[in-house]
Structure formats: structure tokens, C-alpha cells
Length: 354
Image (cartoon, rainbow, N blue to C red; front, side, top):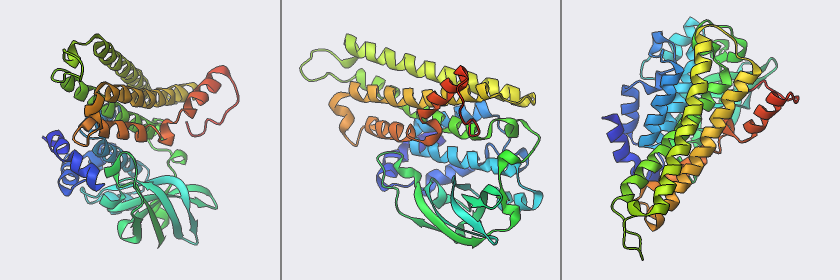
């Protein structure tokens, strides 16, 4: 039911550059904003299932899948906070949290100041996370939404309804709402999973979902469209058949690679086994490969749709824009291909953020 609602509102959300209240409410009702939080505050889902869930939501609409991804991923902070902070931030089961992990702010004398970009879903939040530089190194500061000013800057080609605006704050933040997960030791499979990798898994899953929707749309189009100057439907033409089969094969291969790596790393985390640099680099390779292939497959589907694809009434044009914007995210950058190769070949490289 929620997927039908998402699809029904997708075009309007894209045009108005924000998710409608009905969709946000449906996401919260479904608990997507807490899926990766501890069981006590509404989460506890395993990471492979979460990745499949995000892909499924993104297949309904890229911006909606992205919103569920970023809020669900940010809810992992509940694993690392003390009881007082968990009760404060996550006590309301409908409270949404998201923000920007990049350390674009500063903490001085207990006060956080700064302006951050890429604030996906901040408009829908009760709490907002901002990366800050401190004398003790980087931290994630959790701020009340009331202390945050959102600037309407997300005029983007794709993922237009994610509301990934710039935002700023100047507010006192108690120590209990400052955390840096990589330096915190917590029991459980999710904290044992490579910290920077699960966001990459989420971004890659959104990309796969958007590409799957593009293939779905061109399949439906092919059976009823007879291209100008031809006497047969698109589905009956050998070139279209080859392109469609190629798209499905590439998408399925990229999905299989990602899911296999996620499953292996998750099983190791459940056993309490640490991931080596090679393990983490290969997982990130799978994420970046999924994003790259998704953008390429979506472009293939768009091209296959011909002139029909260019109109606003066609989801193919939205898929094209969403897939390429999602694939631009730093977490799935093609630089990760280089990182993997360096680790595999023994070339010195910084692996701290793998």
C-alpha cells in the first residue's frame, strides 16, 4: 500500500521539490526512519534486509527511497549514545533524525556553529546531525531542529524531492549529544559493521532501485509503442530486445555483487569478526560498481524509450535524473575503484574511511 502511495505522489513531489506530508507520514508509520536503530527504539533490522527494503522503496520513487535511506542510516547513532541522550533524541517513536556527517561546523566552548550542505530530509526532522571539528577531533553533534535554519538551495537535476538543502546553526550542545561512532566500542552486529560502509550500501541500494524502475518502465512501454517509421512494436525489434536483456543482466549482476558482499560482511559482524582492509575495500567496490552500473542501465532504458522518455509524464526522465545524481554521491565515487585496486595490489593508501 505504501508503495502505491509513493508512486502516486512521485511526479508531484519531484515538481514541487519536496515529499508531500502523506508520504512522510507513511514512511514514519512504516518505521523506515528507525530500521537500523537498536531494537529498544524501533529498529533492529539486519543490514541485508535493510538494503533490499531501501531498493524497493527507491523503485517506487528515488527521492522517497533516499529519504528513507538517510533517516534510517542516521538512526544508527542510537547505538552509540548514553541512556539519557537516547531517551532525549529517540524517546518519541515518531521523531526523525538526519543531517550531514561532513565536519563543516565547529565546536567551541560547548557551542556548535556552522553551515552544512546536503541536508537530505532535514526539513522533516525533530533532530539534526552535523559533523563538527573539535580540539579532540571530528564529532557528530545532534541539534534540535528548532535551532536549525534551512536555506532553500536544493535546485538540483535529480532527487529533487529529498530537500537536500544547506542548513546552519549556532547553538549550545551538551556533551551527551556529541558522538564519534568509530571511536566508540559497542556490542552488536551493526556497530561491528564497517561504519562508513553502511551509508555507501544505502546509496547503492537507492541507485539499484531507480535503475530497476527504469527497466520496468521501458518494458511496459515496449509492448505498446511502435516507433515512428517502423511497422512493429518496440518489443518485437531485435535491437530493443538486445538492449533490454543487456540492461537486465547488468543490473542483476551489480545487485548480486552488492548483496553477496553485504551478506558476507554482515555474517562476519554477527560473529564478531573484524573486517580487514581488503574486506572493506571490496564492499565499497561493490557499492560504487552498483551505482555506476545503475546510472548506465538507467541511461540505456531512457535511450530505448526514445522520444517518449523526454516528457515529464514519463517516469523514465525522472529515473535518469535521479540515478545520475545518486551516483554522484561521495560514498559511491569511482575513486573507490582506485582504493580497492591499491589495497589489492599493496599500494599504500588511506583506508581509514573505508
